[in-house]
Image (tube, rainbow, N blue to C red; front, side):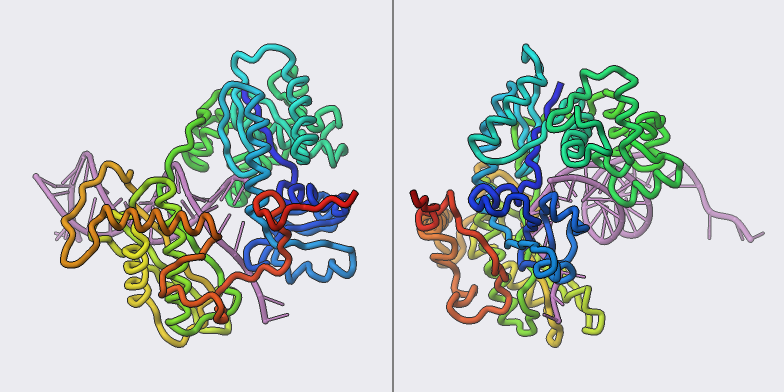
Length: 434
DNA sequence: TCTGGGGTCCTAGGACCC
DNA sequence: TCTGGGGTCCTAGGACCC
């Protein structure tokens, strides 16, 4: 048996922990650049605000309906996530942290009443961290996901599923008839792994609900979709196809991409942005103790501004040898940029991706050429830079081509509604007035 | 005026080889 | 008119997830 513990409206709930007046109010959290809605409170959902909708399209609800919008504060969410995860781990022997707000826990060998234990965990996370969660239990990941979805939906929409399933739902302990009823009440789109495109295809084939999908012949599922859909069908039937992964596997690629606050026309501005993105990507690379063999850089104009000329281009630059050295990675990215940049376009976005990653220790070192620092010295230099930035904040020290922070950088991210780092910065600690 | 970011996996099709 | 067969590897693009 597996449990899926999932934070309800996670980012909004994190904001509410330190700002209780946001309870019972419609609240949304916005993506980088304050562009799109990426989290909604139940009250905001009730206003009809869809996931991913551009902020400017719902902005009028601020005045009309008291909607509160906040810039994403990932530092806060990450810290509260760590706290939630360490409590959730106590439910079983093995845990897979699947995303910032959800984890699977293997309940094999756990004795006692699983429902009761799950309710206790919910209470503990709510009391100790301040976050509301839902817990779903099932014999496969897909069934645990579905159980979680039912637990969440039943809580705020008892018309859809009986409220007996609210907060904690165990599909494993259910009589067949009851399970059938729940599957029949679940639209096929709500099954994990069925996105927009597949849902359309399935509906055309006459599969409307999770029950219909469960009854599909896996061979037919494979023809209709791919091996992915086949696995989903089998998992719905209770046959595990996706093992729990308690060891996080190393990333296969690393990306740092951003939209700009304002369109950037000049090569100089793009060079600054690309330097910044490449440096950050290199930092992530060193953190996971990898080196990259290739650097991809791309720029593109806004696809939403049809009236402007459109230009979108990317290039992969191979490195002379695998490296995690910021300077080498930035140099490669800037060379790539030079090759794809075309003057006269209002660029809206750029990014750097590191590809073909290899473990840092199993590498052959090339001989240093000319006056290059030896690789040992470079490694120490990078460690020093990372240390300084950890201590004094991101970009305390950075490469010159990133430009000066004090000068107006049109490409810098817009974040006008960000809450403080309540749990991660000394200066931002909440003050309690007794 | 204003539309996120970071991932994974799968497949089809082209290039190439014998 | 008629144009092999089988295999591997790589990449671009699609679909999905949060």
